[in-house]
Length: 354
Image (cartoon, rainbow, N blue to C red; front, side, top):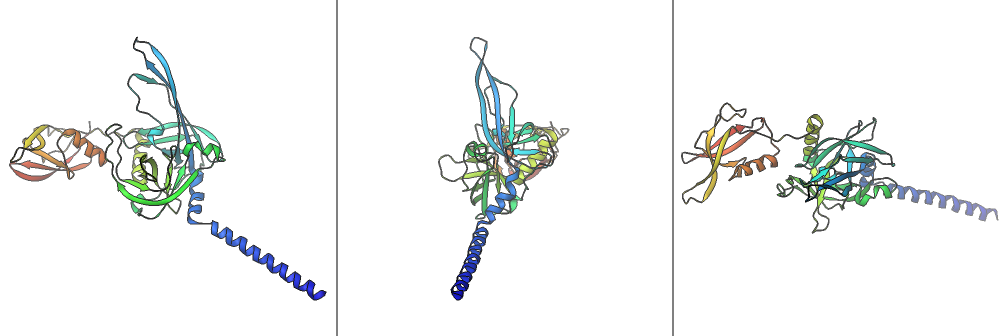
């Protein structure tokens, strides 16, 4: 009888040890690179709620109240003093000139459910980036990575507030995982909105309405992009603004509140047909103002501008599009290709201030 009792005790002890081992194995298996990354970045991810009143002008010269604008999106805190990055389209719409708007009211919900009123520190519709500010100190924030080091095939996790789920999921960011599908995806400047959609990071991590403005993070929990849009006619094709570009815009917004892309070339030019068959278009320089803030000493009247930074151009509007595409401002140098006395010349110009 004593022997049977002893054997039973041994079985029970080893059974408990096995169960403890199984439990530890389960815990270890749940602790993955993705779960660790989500745990690192989530405290800095926020839900953004915008509301705004609209007033329209009637055909009789009066005014009437229109349906208020309300929307939700995502963002992420980038400093302990409460600066937040998000998409500009979460904050501001391109409304008709016949519509008057009241002040934009923005509420930010942090993980855990606490809410803050946010102010707009700066907004840039072309890059689709906005910088918000909430009052306070010691906020949890997301660490920013280096988007120049992103590789196709590496893990990518999208965090945010899709379908307003932050408020319905115990006030925690919603995560979806995938890989980096492509880098440097170019869509040029959108003809309708004027937004710059170049050098985007493509991911197959699921994005839904409301994810805009949230962070795309790597397996180390660092932000590599701002989730911005998805291809509506495709599955799992999402695109993010590289964080290195976003940091540059955010720093300028913090200092100035706006992105000033106004530049001077110090010249006047008109479209001109050239070529042996008279079938090419360029810009004929009518006048060069050497006293302008632009440094344009390498250009002369009679030069025909045919390319800027390697891009063929046929109009001043195309030059401006190239400057937006490359995010060039006053003080930056640009390389031009001109035809001078039937020869091709490469010249440089420093953009001036207006």
